[in-house]
Image (cartoon, rainbow, N blue to C red; front, side, top):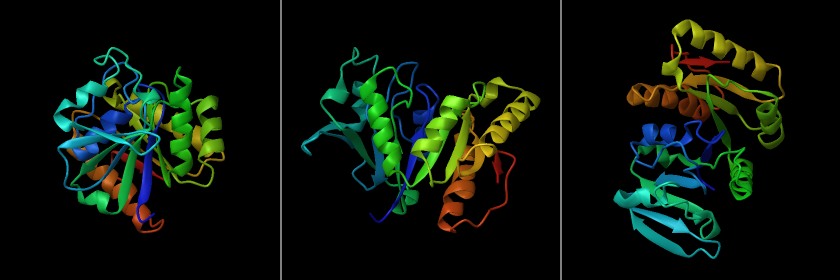
Amino acid sequence: KDKISVGLFGHTNAGKTSVLNALFDEKFPVNHGENTAIPTFLYKGDDCDYISLVDSRDGIQRILASEVSIIDWDKSFHFPFHRMYDYIAKQNQSEVLSKFTFVDAPGVFSGTSSNHIAANQSIETADVVVWVTDIKQSIGNEEVEYLETHAKGKPVYVVSTFTALLTDDEYNRAEQVLIDRMNESNIDFEGIIRFNSDFPNSFKDTFNTCILERILSEGKITPATPEATLL
């Protein structure tokens, strides 16, 4: 294992796949359904035109990246891909992936038990946990207990989504509630970054500077930006 594994976790429809798409200019399907039925791994490589669907026997079915909508929960007419494949893998040319591997996990509290199990398995193998949460919903006892159990000893960052729906004052209050709740827990909470899908490049720069570079510098705190609150 020569790269740091960064996992995106959270509720179904929290915006995990949107975050992955923004960070790496990908086009994985997003909508109001349970899109990520199986873990999606993104790693360094030049073969970017294809996506690999990998089963439990390491059999691989390759599809064109331009046809990625075939794995969309709604557009596939709820086809149970999770019963056939263990995970999805795709290459991306981003230099970030020369040191990191990213995984977009199924919804942690999904109504589908197989999705929940896959999320649990993904978080156990992740080196860094990025908890993606709808800032309007904040974080409650269920989420805290989950992270205390499954992310014990791992650095946990929060990415807040749907931030454009709040005023600055509303966001600041919601963010402080979340920070206080995390600090009261036994979670190794490192900080929070806001995500606005209207400004993906700004988010990417903030994420790379305030999370990835911080991880590589072995805990050295980089200066916080208006989009990030680091502890």
